[in-house]
Image 1 (cartoon, helix red, strand yellow):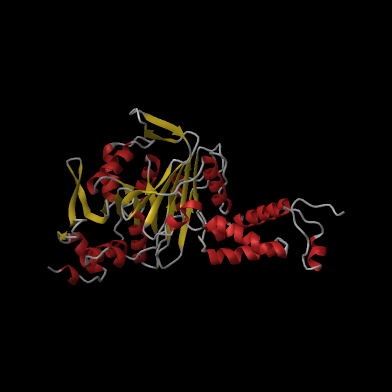
Image 2 (image 1 turned 120 degrees about the vertical axis):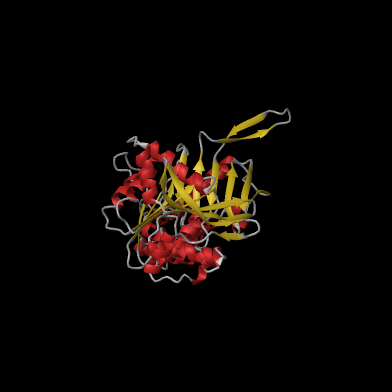
Length: 434
């Protein structure tokens, strides 16, 4: 009897010569599936393209041939891996709905989802926490991320482009019991965020003057911040505005994970966090922002500012002579976005003086675009322009105000500075005529 190797092969060449009629045990099949999954996961460049099922099918077939998976097993193994990557167990039908943007799995207690701006309960749920663990393990098997139940947090991007965030160990849910007391149970919490089609500006901004103004900002090199609450469309708007960056410039995009889909017509250099390394080699947004200055870029976009370190590096970068910088930020209003930049700046490790932070903001940010999500209504609520510093405070003027419910938009006119800059660039002013 021939001895089987690690992957369950007993003289594979001989088997293939005889039409691959060999009977494989369940252990053999599992080993070949593990090997094909591992080989597929190793191709990070391919997975980062967030391929659809057809592209993944072709890639798996090619990989199967390269690692000599027995021909009789290929189709069934590929079908099984495709199912793990692109199907979502009890969530499959829910995630087929085009307007579902976020799904929360609360252990085996229940499932909630956001659709059209509303959060709703789903009628299906996982039968047990163990079923959920197995589901998570299967979904991460087709990615570059590794899963273990003792890791408290995992933030992954799936092969279909969805954001897959897991909290476990020190996570759980509470629910009111019949005696009026909150009952708390420890269980994993899974959040799935879907990144939708990269909309153009004309698909999301219907007011002609506002849309033209937003097209002008990247064309004129006007550094801007897009602020808003969660789910308001900040990244969607930033993606759309990158389409209007002049094509002769070099764009560098910095993110925690490669989520953005920039519509910039040229090549985008992309930097994101690198995990599973020691502290010295770990590449964070702070390190990537610093590194971008050595890459001779002209335009830099930062996926989102969340802490004082990333904020400080961003403010420094806005003042080094780049043609354009832009970022997104959570805030309650356009003016609160400026306040948040200021407070995060003052909290930086170097403890800068307040006047220094104010000056960096005033010189490095020219506009704030504020988006709001309120139930089913969302979109741009306000566009403001920073005009300088007076008596220790940043001065600003409102350019656009919009009611997100009625879509009524008020335009307050172009500033002399923007008007002069547009005229020098040869941009038409007729659209802003009253």
